[in-house]
Length: 424
Image 1 (cartoon, rainbow, N blue to C red):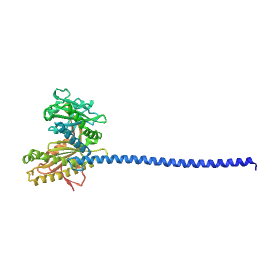
Image 2: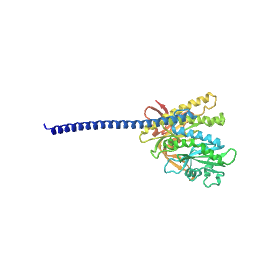
Image 3: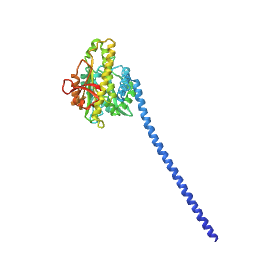
Image 4: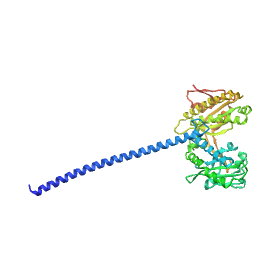
């Protein structure tokens, strides 16, 4: 063989070897790249999962911390209720620091079509009367929320933005007012108002500075509350536009005036609060919401969601009612053990299943969000007409039809009214 042939053969072999080696290197490199990409994707997924877990854990810890600081010891306190009470506690501390006699936190109505504000937290003699009042955007609170700047008013009745109707409804007189925006990340999430200094003096610049400096904790809790519409729903402050059917529950105490006859006023109020707090806790833990408190009673709502059968909603409401009557009997037994003459006091509950709708009622400067509908009217009527000489739960025809055979119902003497005796 000629020398040049040997050279050509050697070059061919070398080229083949280099080609094989290059192919192997490419395959190895691609395999390594694929492994790295897989590991990277897994790391991202794990990171996302860890972030989600961390967020869930953080929220559970926050709610646990809120519950630990609340006067209510029940583990059934909802997040919305816990946040509201935390806000009220912090507001009360700041109110005392400023020497004010009344205070409130107002937030926007979550309904996109509404420009009103309502009271989320309240302290003072008028708190009960103000809880369901809505304030217009042209009020002092609405103005401070819009512009994001504090406002001191020495004589509110001379201010064109002051809603004197609120004072009329609450039955008191506002002499001095300090309103500050509650700001988080440069966004006003609500306002805090402080009324009527104990010493009768006007709020000064120093009061304003202190209120702003000390309001950060309140602002953070308000921001946490307003970011989730479910918090409003849990407190009965808002209901989504649909659905429009619900199990409406009314409760009250018969002969509650006897509590004031045998106890001093503060003791009687404590008893009423025990009853209403216990009932509200049970309703909330069963998936219901609080609409409003009515003296010695309250109105609750179990909304029929699109994904839940009406019968399921009706049974939740019935089970909660039975549990609340049992809880009241325990409270009453403790009253009787203290030798209080409260034998004539009983719990009455009326439940109706039907339609409802929310509407704003009242003058333009302030309004109340009320719940109306056949279910509301029927439940109120059932409670009002129920027996006053025993603990009793009465339901209407539609509600009775939604309960299965596992429930004991007594038709009674009145057509369309059934006494719910519990589960079989």
